[in-house]
Length: 247
Image 1 (cartoon, helix red, strand yellow):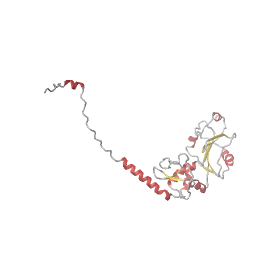
Image 2 (cartoon, rainbow, N blue to C red):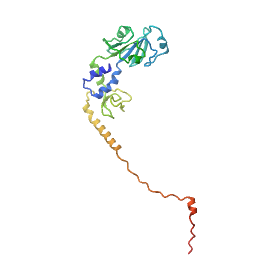
Image 3 (cartoon, rainbow, N blue to C red):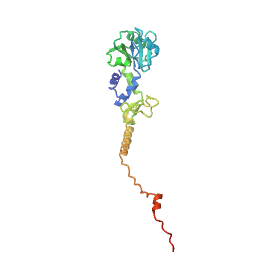
Image 4 (cartoon, one colour):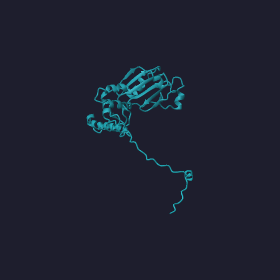
């Protein structure tokens, strides 16, 4: 789903660095989870001892949300907190037969529609069981996705020179020294374009090039003066003693 959203944003006026960094931002707006028949081998979210014990009861089912915040409830004993904005639900069915996702979860989350998809091959291993129905609530509107990415302040990576949003470059992985406390800061000037800050990136590349040349300079050879050894006590005893000069 995240790849699908990035592919739709690739037709907009975002640079490659912004699209790579937007993957972390958009992941906060995807509620992904699954309906599981057992949580005995689930290690992706915290599982209580009571939930482990209930997994051995035949017919038990659990609703699990892995992100953006982990949640786990027993079907019929609680509800999962969903997104507070308009979403569309993507459903991938495994070996579990149930209509809880489309009949109960979708109305509770007030999704705009439900779409079926094939279950990924690695999903049973990821969730710890093959009896599952995977789901993901995502933002379907391209204009909303565009506003989410465009509202974040853009910067240039101090290492590779690529444009980025957030606190980490999507290409080299270096962290931005300015946005470590707040990963996604709002844009200070929404109308600012990449051309306005391009000279700053050019100066950073010049500094890195100069530093690379300095590292290749051969160190200067330092000549040390020869120090005469101090005579030992044995050498002094073996020398003949000169008689004092008598006028």
